[in-house]
Length: 168
Image 1 (tube, rainbow, N blue to C red):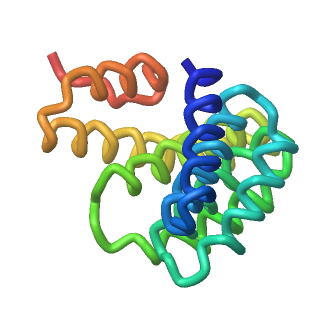
Image 2 (cartoon, rainbow, N blue to C red):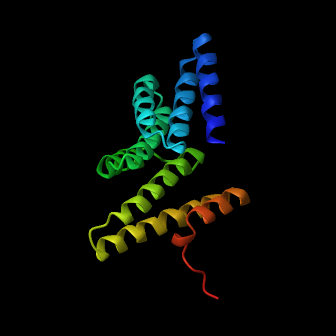
């Protein structure tokens, strides 16, 4: 699926450039960067996302999406501090709770899960876990609000260890 997304992004970039649609090209570049993250090609994702930020110009959505890809690339490369810095830089730019925000929250949750494994002590691990639980709960609430059952199931499956237990 991610390989197909990469192929789609490549075609979209070529189409956009052939018709001088830079805003569409910026969107397609971001899709390419996110596909590289999904394929574990973090160096490629980093290069494409960095270029996407430049290509985006004043397009805030394109810049935020590129920064979301940077979070995944940095986390995949083990550059946790760089990924955290991107999270902090981007979070304040999201005013709406839309699918782009969901992507950002998903990238942050994956970063937190990765960081939890690198925690120096139990207190730090617990703090990260609490933050991760908040992010997962937020994603589930978004899915519920959108009546997106499949999305909810995907989030539950990926983060089953981070979902708060419901009282019986």
